[in-house]
Length: 402
Picture 1 (cartoon, rainbow, N blue to C red):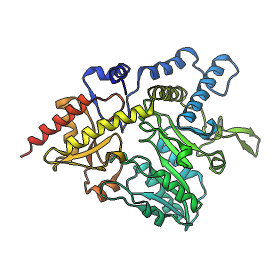
Picture 2: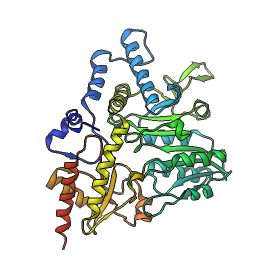
Picture 3: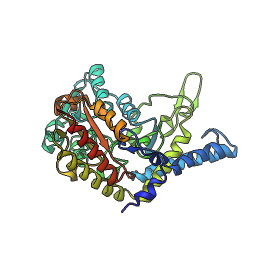
Picture 4: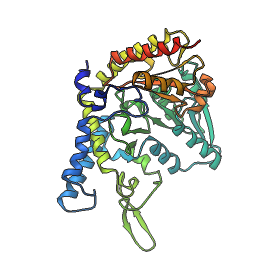
């Protein structure tokens, strides 16, 4: 069980009367993480992997220790399977732009993807003639595993899918899909931006080939993300950028790439941000991901059913709350979701997201809501009282509709 009041003390913004329910977009950052980043600037501000002097050596040690912490957090086999990126989007693009695609081969993805895990594959279709097949869920966002069995065949090179929908909160069957993909010699890439912050993610149990996520959604700073993959697969990926730090040797007419993962991290990295991400994993691990998941399920259950009971409110996503986590999207009759979000901000200090959530195919085809939805998303510092305030505020807005 979480001591939520104790946790909230690490987030000063929450003392201002703000109710922060926009965690699917970005989370708040606790004081211990900020202090760890300031430690870098105050005590050993220097570049990594470059210098012999003690400041550079300390910075390099802290940077690589953060990589090891991330590897442990998702149960990677070693830190060499962890590549630092700017965000989830860059990690996905690194795979999309780094592999050798051939006309007539196939990529399988789904209708509920964030644009970052959707348009990159459409671009490959345009560039190389790769076929893209899209698996569709039911109205609640739940998939029939037989649809993946039909879509994935011996022509499939990659299956790219989200672990948790950023609109519906639905948890997808990534482990089962990994098995199907591997039976056909295909690889599985997972967009884990919404799962790693909220669930215990074990890449070895899932059996995925690539997994990308962002630090800013898991109590870390912006500007840092992670791409996980096996070393043998990373050997086959051409880095998007090369230069300082990526090269082992250079001559007038040749160059030799550095070892993995350094070959993918060109130039000076986001040192403080990577160190901050390592501190964020420490913070989450200390509290316990299972404890966080249990707490959020209680909040999600309360939010889902209470909103669903309000006249003129339409709530999306699975009715079975075991199949979802942390995110509830809804609309109030035909009100513009942006107007609802603004009203919640002005009247109740509640911060939610509104719009298409970078998931236009889902909105237009599955939900039939071209203007999108209002999305409330929880995290470890949210409380039952805050959910009650959200519900009562939505009720008030609903009553104002004639």
